[in-house]
Length: 231
Image (cartoon, rainbow, N blue to C red; front, side, top):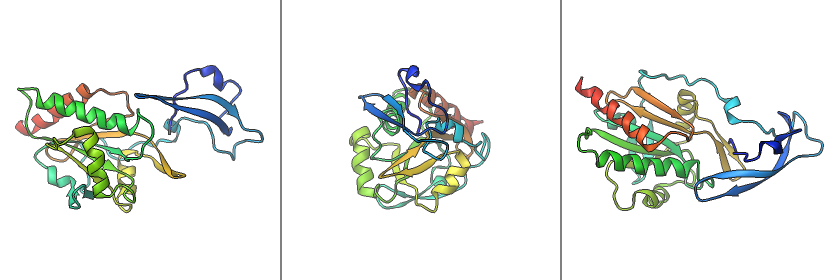
């Protein structure tokens, strides 16, 4: 997972491959690390301070490629497949309900909440669209857990937004297809962020990398993708 460093001077004297200790500060909207120290005796074999971007490989799927049809477990205990949304633009992202960093999974959920509101309140927007939040922690994020988590962001207004979990035998292929990195780290996960928009034929229309995109950018991409069916 890539952490935010407020004062780059704290990285002076620290090289790739060095083991480090630091203090993680979590605010309402973001996080950062401080008091960064190189661990004594650390070296290339120690956990490194490095950007997760350096570990990423190109996604195997590109815009225009069909999304493989995989079966997920929906929040009500029902199977959910990508093909269930054919005929609609589909935006999906990856989260886990115990994520502690507000600018990671919680930001993805807040952005989905805001993008859905933009689409619902735009009178000229197409109506063939849907949102899907996919947990990569199926052992903890059982259907009832996902439903409770979802309520924090969509309230009782469940229209056009579904939560599901990716089974452990499905996640590896999704990861390869989309350059999604998920690694267990103690009782939590180290991961990157991927948000994908599919067109009504189930093809990749756009992929948002990281967390710097805006709800409006997502809503605009959804509108563009949904209208492809009309051409």
